[in-house]
Image (cartoon, rainbow, N blue to C red):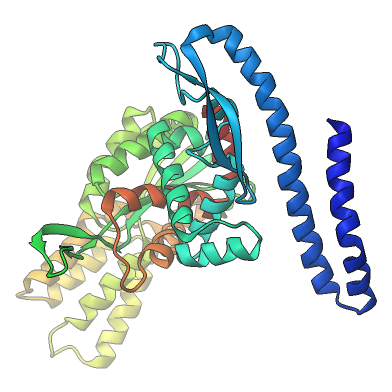
Length: 441
């Protein structure tokens, strides 16, 4: 086999060497490097075919001894990381034993082939599909990198990997085996993004295509991160993102992650969110179930949300309040908000608004209800966060920049799985995902 590999490499080099020398002599370094890359890809393909072919024959002998008459030889085809297809003989189980898991094609199972693609091709393709603004851009990037697959394959490979991650459980695939939150200061934040969903009805167009509506839907995203003693994001810790359309599904996924990460052993937990009541009604009780003690839990209303409500309250003040007085009230409110003197804000507003309209009542009640979650000076002194910038950034980067494109409509079940892949890329957990996927199969 060694002589065969040497012959492949030697033939390719001998064929391309004169061209390489001419390009360098002409000063065309760029063309030289491009042609060298193509030659190496050809070597990759030829070497792989030779090595995989020899290995497949050896594996067939082993499996035939184990499976006996229950296995038959069939031809199988799959693609390498270059996009090149390889056709080889393999053993296929006629009857699948109860203890057997995975592909009945034993060669594909042995090499962890995903569908008809190597895991390396899935890795490269899905990564670019989630990093790029569209499947088409990912397809163009792959072709630029000399990976020759069609546009539909980019989409199919990405969605197949997303299906596998959902089936196995993302909380198992996106975490290192020894990862834990024990002894760490943890921040959890959650908010919603927007994506247009394709919903088919009963009507059909003149050409026979089903008509559909494209309503906006709000996926709920959470982030789990670690902060240092001075309240800054811990640089050596990777964030964890999770996203679901259903509030209950999001809470269940968050609980799976936190349970696996031993949240009960964290030194402190801070929950930051806006005023959405479902968050405060469900997340703190869930943390208690997982063993987080009340004295190690801080609940925080995002400072920017609180400030925005102050601005709206001042804008709605009666006409008898002059512009100068409004500015003074706003400045005073901001100072009181930072100090945590929410009672003073509420009392002043109730004095100014003699007959408040419904929306003003709601804003005043917002401060009254969340007063204990607005102690920002204390949070700062204790090395905790005051704002939810980590989740606002995540919403924009994970959801809006990839799944909120103009005239782009998604199947709700499919896009929910793709959020996971996009989150894995942007949290820098993609290598962990691929490594665990390889082990899981």
